[in-house]
Length: 103
Image 1 (cartoon, one colour):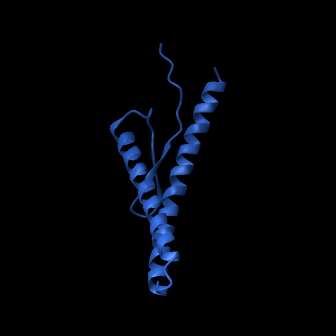
Image 2 (tube, rainbow, N blue to C red):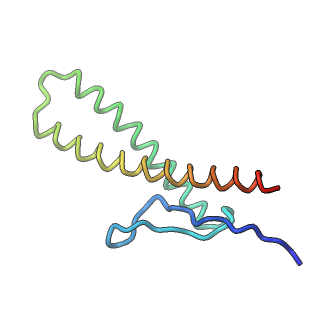
């Protein structure tokens, strides 16, 4: 008999149609896991690009309140994505550490 450790559900980097979190039961090596890894990478790159853009805007004395409101909305979206990624990765790190401690 083979022993398969229970792995916790992975929080995916996107939400369902109603904005609810999506989870995946996997060992981390499937097609959907790789797709989630790719989406996380894109989201993190976009957040970094947005931070660079915000830094430029903050140095611009002619930036309008409308431009600032728009970029703040995008920052909110990016921060939500980054927070979800951090929660997902943190949970997987804890599960991995717990699994190693049980050996």
